[in-house]
Image (cartoon, rainbow, N blue to C red; front, side, top):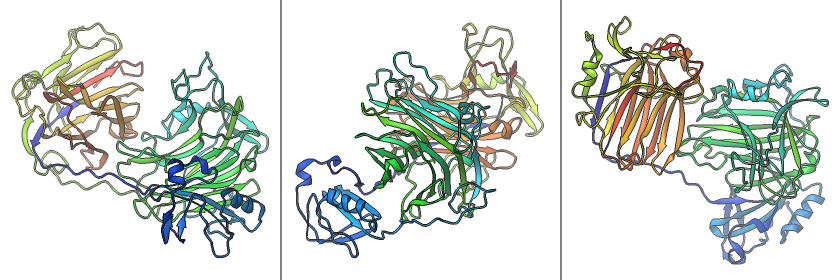
Length: 636
């Protein structure tokens, strides 16, 4: 790894504004009025109200009670929840039923209406089967990825490799249970290999909760922020996810949740509540968004039958929309939901992604073994709705970055220097150099770089020889230099400071990452509750930034700055510009720029508490890694 143009800039600024997303507290439940959260006092309290607007509909009435009497033109009037359900289920003209709870007004109401908008019973136009094998019209989309399972390839390998770069979330199990939860099986009806997920009622857990204290079970697979763009979703994009699924013949829901699909947000400040969920509830099949549940059909309509599903979403903070449709294997659409325009992208979200599988609250009524099959999982994007381009940044003398009011306080120039230790250990950095002493080789030297036309620092790590400091070579290796208590104040970060730590780096031509950490830059806090607060790491073929939570030192967020970084950036100079505001209303951000093309390869920003009650913060540069067989004998 080579390092050039090492700078630090510092200035104190005014407070940084933080904006939190808030949404109206509207919940709905199509199935059980007793699920409502506020107790009898709330349920039985009458409210005088002339107009009630919920989920874009306006209703007129005089008094609202637990069971609200609402008359709808052309609809069916009912004062009782179960009466309404019975009428809907037994009347062929009643195709739609919703039962909403409006908590902010302490209102619980039911409605039954005929010819409700959004309900489609006719078959939609079929596509050319060379494009996809789904009933729904996806002509405006471009396919970005298609998953076809084969008995020749482990589904775990499909999920862990590009484009997903993910892992299966499955419990460790209890009582020595160690069964595989994902397998590829041959489905006679589709005449092809499909994915089958299995859940064991008496053994499976949620993660490593072997005592099952959380009373939850999980076997899911998902995309992550580390997945490629073809299978994750960004602001302003319009996407479609189409797939086939088949529930087990006797699978059932219960009083608690039983999710089989979710769309969730990824981001440091992102609301963890799903944007959309498909859930089994007792004997019903339901979908939900942030404001409402919708009763799709009796669960028997989905048991032991292949169903086409398509979820369309426009991700936007005001022009967003969601559509969900189901059709049977004959192509007959039996549910078609389309929302109005609204907010489908919350503050703090970096990307959105799907989760598929089984995640449920334990219940004794579940079968001992439940299964769900998936096939032909296909991702689409509408090219008319592109994610925003990265912000343009002005050209600095050394870096493609707008430093604003920050002033340069340090510049380490190695041009013409033969011994880099003279610069590193001298003022103002007065660095503490951490390197293995187990073999008589210097890890830092200077070389002339033809691209930059100047002398730069050259760092070498030896896989078979180096250790961590003076320790015997075990599973970690370190060659780094860092600020210390002896450094001048212009190098260190104190509470209230805003500091940028820009530098340039070039990974060796055959530099390799691994599944373990390979850190090249860190910010550490001295004498506080936290050591390393922020770190830049090459992991596998990704460049990741780790951001620690001030309130919980054991919690870190890992943001992927750039996928396929080794193919993009090996043997190329990159600009790396970390910037931190050290206050309880501060921020941390980092920008990665291709030094030649000036293209932004990665960007991360998180606002919040960025001071750890420490004496000071200090930077550290170099290589610190967990040893792995994939490393070269010598990495630069």
